[in-house]
Image (tube, rainbow, N blue to C red; front, side):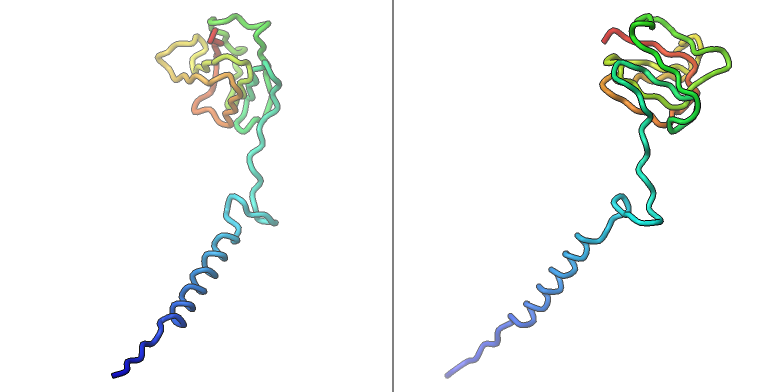
Length: 138
């Protein structure tokens, strides 16, 4: 008695080819983050801030007037209020030391405050209007 077995290879090869084609299309399709062309959004631009500086901008996304603070002119672990009537909504910390920003002009911890590492931190939008800062020893 002789039996004949049919191979499932032709159907399996077609499924394999379709799977490979779909995978290749998915891997080569541009993603939203990597899309280019007329409708693509540019990545956010970091504000210019040199090494050793704390830079504060009056508006979000590093816009408006910029204020610079350096270690040489700023007391460590002392509350440094921004000029009356001013404030900041974005910042870059390149001092090499942690910096705490305060919603309160007196560095009161009953209002909002955040500490940013000094190793190169850019915050395009503060959750509150910064009215005072404090640089820490380490």
